[in-house]
Length: 259
Image 1 (spheres, rainbow, N blue to C red):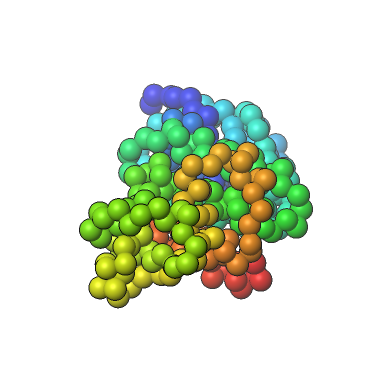
Image 2 (image 1 turned 90 degrees about the horizontal axis):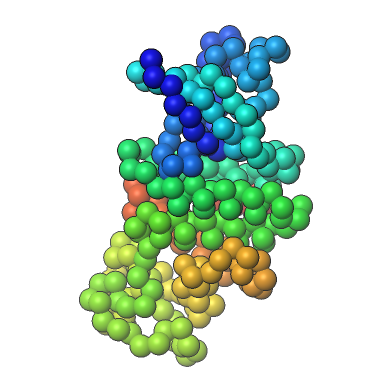
């Protein structure tokens, strides 16, 4: 059977039999890899400890019919702070879950690997207990994910009639409406004729608009109100679920653990 090499970030693993593990990971080339790490749970296995969650590793694999087989693995980068902090682990898990549930086709997206790495690295170096920073990273990931996968919402024109609603960014006296099903903001006429919509205040609208333009370094220094950040994330998740047909319940989980 042919062998191949890949650099990948490990997103999920589960036990197989008495000593093996099934590993799911996202490669630098931008596609999912599902593989078996045989005997990796044995104490003397050369793979033991190298295939932990969120490790980035260089791998040598053998092609298999259903699952590939991991022959060798060398850790390139591990995000140690993520595995040692509950909140960081939760947010990294939400991000990995989005990748796992959406990237099931054969389409390659190497930019998505870069986004995944950048966000995991940012989570890793975030101050402990800085919940606001973690939520900012999650909003950043969701918005860039939608952008890279072609689902970016329309924020500068009406998503229903394509009318230019004016300079919404500098608005002060009125709210803007957003439609998940139509895929973006609505002008006043369309908002009045559309049932399912969400009202955005100035701050939330600006945040949602800026997320698609900002770099992660710029996001760090932006002061955000926790309520607006919460509204933005809830809307982004609902939008992502609707347009990618994947199931996520991370917002409910964050609420359950008081985040």
